[in-house]
Image (cartoon, rainbow, N blue to C red; front, top):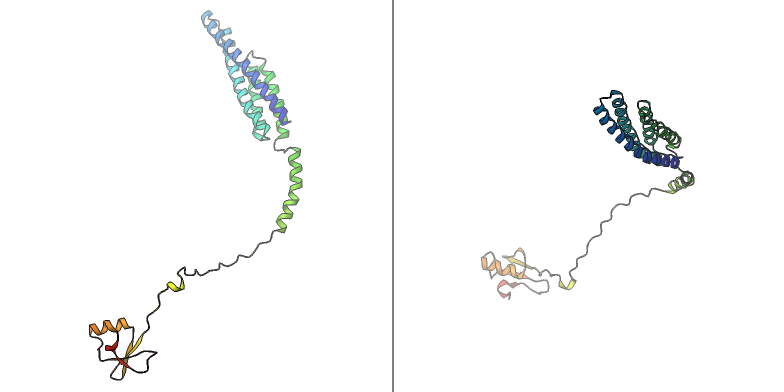
Length: 219
């Protein structure tokens, strides 16, 4: 029904548009001649033809849009076609443009078809929904929510080879007057001796040595 309504509204719109131009042109010419002849009756009828032609042309434009909406199954389609029919009937009742009743009848019939087909899906679409809905429900039932796993922090290993990593210098135990002063590396001991914090006569003991030795013996 939607396709039929669309085709009828399209054909009626095309022919009524063509006829409205002819009637409007004739009305305009008649209005000009009536002014010259000063005939009020002809002037009134010619003016009515121009107005009716404009209404029929407007109805055709609305019918084009309404037919397209009807083809898509929208409610606005039959509403616009109904307005088009009313415009044509009004134009015919107020002028000598009697053919407007024909176009109004076609628009009204198209609106009737569009009203009963609005919002309905094609048969294939309804069958597809009928078959797909249970499947969709079954798929949703099979879906289980997996608990979110906590993020695992993986330490990044150093890319520096073991052989290339710096080795800490061994520390020596330093004593003065029988009391341990602290543990220092050879470089620290030499620096402290230079600064006067340690004396060359102080003693140090290394882990692999057999006895205490003076700081002055450090090379």
